[in-house]
Amino acid sequence: MSLMIDQARNLLAPVHAGDARPRKVGRLVAYDGLMLEAVGFDRPIGSGARVIAADGHVSRAEVVGFRGTRSLLMALDGQAAHESGARVVPDSGGGVAAVGPGLLGRVIDGLGQPLDGLGPVPAVDKWPLAGRHGNPLDTARVTRPFDIGVRAVNSLLTAGIGQRIAIIAGSGVGKSVLMGQVIAGAEADVIVVGLIGERSREVSDFLATKLPPAVRQKSVVVAVPADHAPLLRLRAAMRATAIAEDFRARGLNVLLLVDSLTRVAHAQREIGLSLGEPPTVKGYPPSALGLIPRLVERAGADARTGGSITALYTVLADGDDTSDPIVDAARAIVDGHIVLSRTLAEQGVYPAIDVGKSLSRVMADIVTPEHGAAAAALRRLWSAFEENRDLILMGAYAPGSDPLIDEAIVRRPELLDFLRQAPGERIGFEESVATLIGTMAP
Image 1 (cartoon, one colour):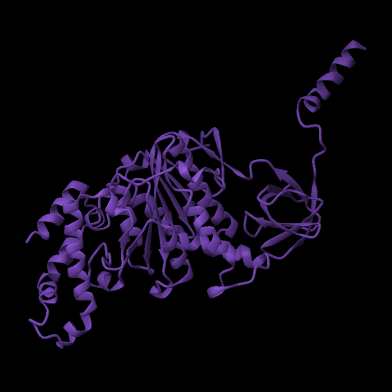
Image 2 (tube, rainbow, N blue to C red):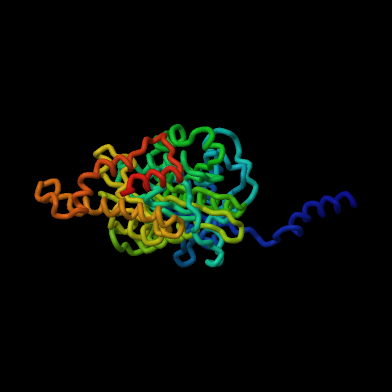
């Protein structure tokens, strides 16, 4: 009898030690190819779920809304073989990301699963995918320069530690090339890269050509190609940012690169339209435009820990339209933007930075007066030529009419040479500034 009592106590011990509440199990009642509807699954928005078919196949989903008593879920596994009546059970790990130093040197997907064939990721700490809300006063000012390793950026668009920068360009103008130069030349403790919504081939090319072994050992790559579910693409951006936030909380200087922010907004557009949101400018629902500041504002310097996230976001300007809603929303929230010119790219000038349209909003706080004066002088020459380009090329400009335009025409080749930099070449901050001051010396 005592043996039976002991066995009963052992069976009941986990119930008394843990949560004794009944576990809610829902049932799948509708699926339209993107959105799943479940009954009996009352979970908050953002909660994870597992959809279990009769044959035992398990797919993952996330609660994104509700309609009456039905919960609306978005599949994370793309076109899974769902069936009516499938069980829907909670997934406790849905809203957190596994983080920690064990991620360094690894390549993972939007769910945190390894893609590099190196076995399980030894990440033991947890961080909310949506980030942790903090006091705005805990965000430190940007007062120290960040060495990008690209002469044109270091000297003319000086970045600071904790700055958020948008790289704006059309397709095929050199965003990925510039990102590769930044990764190879930047001075950072940790590099976190989010490759979101790009071609699968570009992921392989990026790992092979943009991440040399020395850099890869301090890097984390989160990759979700374009053919994956929109919620998975959105999660990849949130996971990359969460990983960067964890390293910042450890007091490290982190370089975060997200390629591309436009694909993240496109994923949110698919989700928003599926939920019935009204489309606004160019078909973007309000949630797609509201996502950008929520994601970008998570980067920056932390005054408490001394860590920082210096973030670069590539923004695709469809049809080279820099007034696109996503471009406008990104440009309004970041601390600086680098606009790449297709005209310069066609002339073989790489990186094809349009100096006149690019801006660093923190540059005045982190450079010396001599450096700032030299940068302003070069920008004046650049703008003088660009504003009168048509007159100059048609031969309608009479030399001697304006000394500034005359100087801009004469020194145009010199300015283009100043911008040019080979993909594998690194030019440090001090050297970049010295070259600029020497170039613009009277």
